[in-house]
Image 1 (cartoon, rainbow, N blue to C red):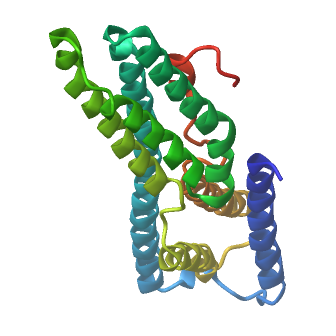
Image 2 (cartoon, one colour):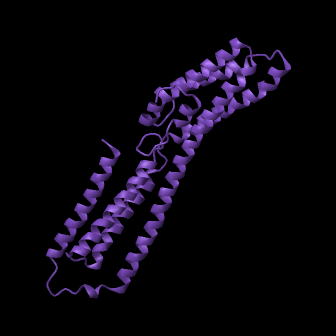
Image 3 (spheres, rainbow, N blue to C red):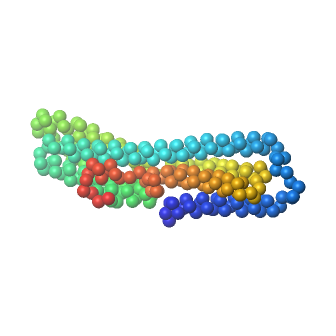
Amino acid sequence: MSEWLVLSIAMAAACAVVLSIAFLNHRRIGEDDDPSETPDVIEYMTMMIGVIYAIVLGLAIAGVWEARGAAQEYVRQEAQALHEVSVRSEVYPPAVRDRIRADVRAYVSYVVDDEWRVMADKGEVTPRGDLLLEKIRRDVTDYEPATDHEGQAYQPLVDQVGAADDARSGRAASAAATMPGVVWFGLIGGALVTVGLIFTLQIRRSFREMLLAGLFSALIAFLLFLVWDFDAPFSRGLSATAEPFLRFFPGLPD
């Protein structure tokens, strides 16, 4: 099911529930009820709870957005490091250079074509990817430089392989959802409390009040959807992409 369809259903369901409760609640209110008699303390507490929940929700959105940005940065660093390995191997003999470049391209192709789907489905990287990266490391470290020029390129190549390995570890750590279950419990519970509190203000069935209640509940549903969507950086609609790999290694399939 499309993420945007999930969002539409969630927003429509939130509006329907709130408006249904408002209509049912209005039917049992007597004609002599005066909405201006809402105690000031209820209005104050409603406002304070709304502000507190808004802060918590904003922090949650900022946190998952930062995690998504970090995941994309790990992808860029990994692609950049592998590109440097491929370019810096130019000084090596043709047989060694071609082997390094072929193994780098094989690793990148596997990450883009196969490992990316595993990250999206399971939130983890694969042992096969680890083996392909280790093969690149062996290509670089097992070669003994024969000239000073090759010797000067050796350590930078080793460093770039290490940088790619470190970025891969960061990508693996970012692949799974980052929000703990207890935080989700707080966000959803807070949303129910915040939306529910509007009924303490004796909402009526006027068009203006119904419109505001529906828009408010839809906004809460939309913000919760954003948290959910950003929470898994590689698997949902606004996810991190493999674009850096495709940019540094043109010719790979999208």
